[in-house]
Image (tube, rainbow, N blue to C red; front, side, top):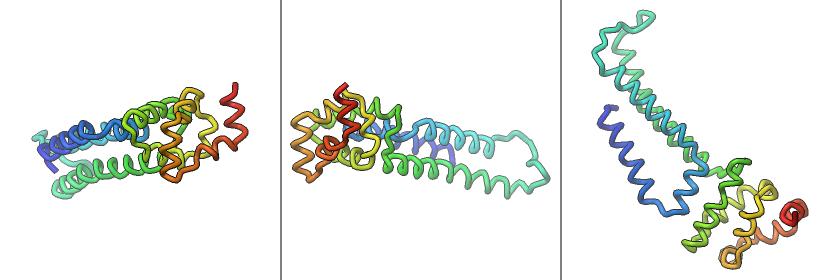
Length: 174
């Protein structure tokens, strides 16, 4: 991998983020730890600079220079690939933690504005146990009549499941 390739990858990532629909963008920003991606790109940049810069420093422990250059090149490629796979896994799991529960309302509101409810249904179905901790403002958006109608049309009865959860009702009532 070269610096040109790394800059191309960065450009593609920025382009993908700008082309995404609002719901997708909110979902990516909520579930993907962007620090990992930034750290992976910075590490890749440092490896490429160390590999290509004429520092005149010999490899440590008497390792042959060709092997060190080979492993640095492979690492510079595998680190961003690993970060991308990790980002996809985090997004696919859609795990709502305490911090994310307070921010998931943005996805709910964006889905109402855009009239796209697939991402909301995916998040709700993957986090049935955590939904009882949902803030009341997010729960009120979740029970908006347009969202209920869209999710029922999509054969999702997550609202009925939430209404049958006594812990969710107690939290929403207070």
